[in-house]
Length: 68
Ligand SMILES: [Zn+2]
Image (tube, rainbow, N blue to C red):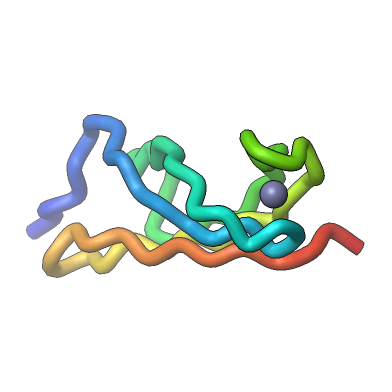
């Protein structure tokens, strides 16, 4: 049974460049594991965001890396 939410979920991560806490929106319908690039809202540098959605709880984990 899938508990995956079809609605966008707010999540926060820390920018890999400036360290600021950034709010973003995750679309769980894009999969349990996602990776995409988002520009930091504070320093405008690209962050590679790694998103995992727990298939049982729907909890979202998100962390960022420098873009290489
Ligand atoms: Zn930043």
